[in-house]
Image (cartoon, rainbow, N blue to C red; front, side, top):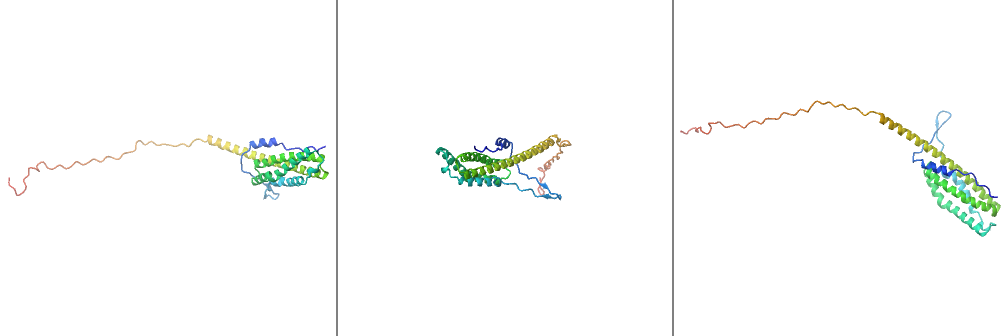
Length: 232
């Protein structure tokens, strides 16, 4: 009988968590050394360091399969061959780019979850190949696939735990930011507006207008005077 599928991490819970997260700065908690001095925090494992060893074993196991010699009907071998080719394309074409993006943004839930979702689908396809190999393939090929399947499951579980931990940390940061914003808003609303005093001294004084001097008038008898030296 085929080995039962391993316990899976609840992907729906991760999707719900993603909707509640925002792009926030990633902070790392520090530990206290016994001597009282602060020790450097442990480096965060990258997504590649979590899943890459299992992916390498999956690639090695699938590449070594000789499906054409399996003791199974032609249509069963054809499906197994298609699944094997799909796994190899995913390992060589799709996953490298997803891992690069996740490693470039450590602690970012969205990029890590893309890798988790891909590995979840990869696990399903590999499981189908193993179930066929368990019944039709040589013992060494079935055992190799079983080992790769278990390591991929362990890597998927560890990645899921890491994503969940990052999600909780981001949520805690959001709650703290919301509480700080709420407190700052409450203080701003309660503070009374500054008072301003206005002194009314009446209208501003105006400068007195200057009076124009009247033009000088000639003497009234100036026209009747006789020039000197002339007789009337």
